[in-house]
Image 1 (cartoon, rainbow over the protein chains, first blue to last red):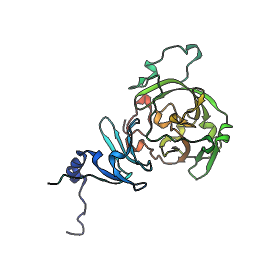
Image 2: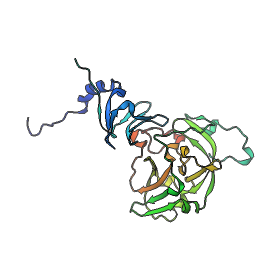
Image 3: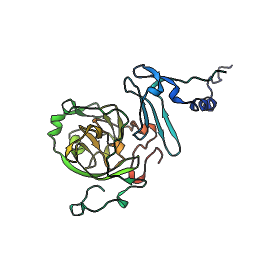
Image 4: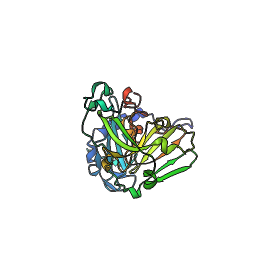
Length: 92
Length: 198
């Protein structure tokens, strides 16, 4: 590798992995709140849906973990409030 | 838009009173992106922070001592319901901003509970916006934003921040809670500015 070669790939390279991720049932995933560090199943998050979008808040500290807004042609996802989201992949 | 003339209070409204894509409701739906803060008036305060860091502050007693107005306005929620001829009492932002020295163009409204929404400062003055504390002659219920909420009825209702606790003025336009997640930065219901790019 030369010094001028980028060490990253463009976003298209993530397409396959993302398709796999978003095909799973997110409620079975576990995550960690970026606010208080609480770890738990996403299904245990407090979900607010009577709003212009869907807001998932931490069961312990009420911080926003995930926001999802669906527009006629797009879906906006904001996962800033999660340190991670763990999605188990099927073993072969 | 807004006020109902006394001679026509019994007239059925709708049709031309509704912005495009809206339907009429007689309920007052409660929308919320989180738990309802229960702020006692004695613990409430409202601040205006300028672009140079100057802070103007009102506690509940000082706020209630300001001149207030009766307001009758139509409400338009981006989730497509509209409610016409709603009655409020509140303090005009013209009153709250009268002694605030600022050259800022934008404001970010901040609420108890962490909600934010951005507005051009020119949309908060000249009789267009209030901090409202009564609805239908009663103290504003917490589920509707009490003890006090922003009321900016010429924009979609997400701009009328419930449980408002202050404005931060700025030379630059930052985006608020819903505006950073795909909603329009301005939100004019008559132009159907629901989503970014509309």
